[in-house]
Length: 179
Length: 179
Image (tube, rainbow over all chains, first blue to last red; front, side):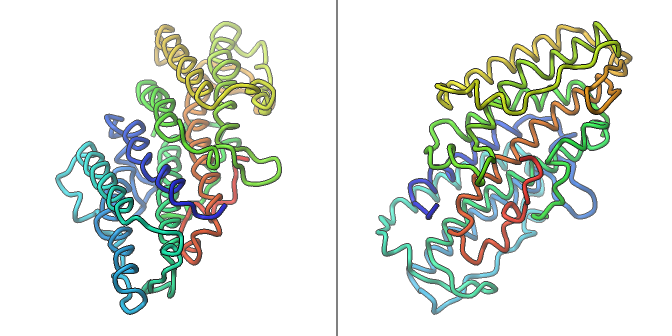
């Protein structure tokens, strides 16, 4: 399936409500637990998504459209949420994510992109040349990666509790590619 | 984390709204696609969850409470949705799932289980002796397995479209334990 801007936006616009339905007011026994060590909790993941809305996807799209390959994107700080989420409740982070995502999609739509714009190129600091189309598809894939991670982190809390069923539960076999 | 009935129900009651926010009215280019071959689409997964509400979790809980180990659970038909979902839209399946889940949780709450009830045992046709506590934890883990699967199936549609970013997207490294 090729990247299609309307399809991408349809999925991107649903992520805040999906997270809201899943996580808001869920007991902190679920939302504050991680998979051990320096892995992330659902709370950490939402903070990470907030930071991505501020510094990653739309800022990079604008660099591609305004500067092309002449200036590499700023590296993305994958640990910013451990600084920025301080003193914010999960509910506040969910609200912030919903507001930022809606505004970013409004701006993306406002760019009035033509099919040929999607082929315009920019320079990723590690991956090298990438297209605007790939950037937008990666934004979608990044949402899916973190929904995938949240399902895994939550299931992990019941790893022992499921007893022999653990062998049947696919999510418990996942080794955590996105940590 | 031990199985805690209130925590389990908090997550179980959120799954229908999570799926609703994520999938309702999403373009069928997303919801009808699978990972190739006989793998499942998001539409297939919702049909599978509907069937589970009808025949798996609460019926098995009642067998444990009424008959104990004397009668094995009926085997679960993992492919029932390919027969039962026929002629139903995704929206209809989402509605049906929400209604069945709410009714099942109402019945679970109505059982007025005491902590010692959670240790009562039944007989799984393949796994052998299991407890009511493990059954309820597995119900939660089963929800998480299928949210995990849906994120993976959707991301798969953009596997090529993300270009070099595919190396960074954890969900695209997942090999599909739950198919």
